[in-house]
Amino acid sequence: MGDLIWIDPNALPASRVPKSAASAIRRFIDRIQTLDESDYGDFMREANLYLLDLEDSLDPRNEACLAKLYDMQIYTQYYPNWDIESTRQRLLEDARELEILCSETRP
Image (cartoon, rainbow, N blue to C red):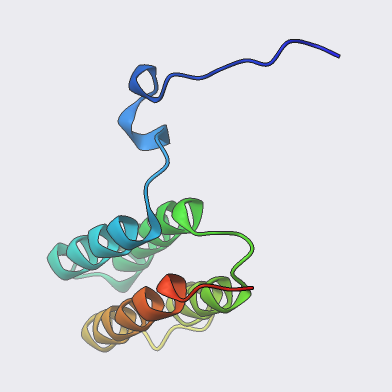
């Protein structure tokens, strides 16, 4: 077997340091609230980037949490209604629900 490699989180770029799910969700909410795009395509690309960033911070074993995130991606990117403000409000509501889902402990 090879030697274990220890990674110093202080040596990693800030974007690669694991964040807690709660702080990542709060950051997602802040980013969506301040997202200032007038074209849905631009809004969708930014929102999807934020969703992917959020996914990196979620516990992959929490299926309910991931299912909610994937639902958010579906209505934002794959089956959009093309209205920025209603999508923004739905993302914010679902992000608040995601806070609850991700904070619940799973057996």
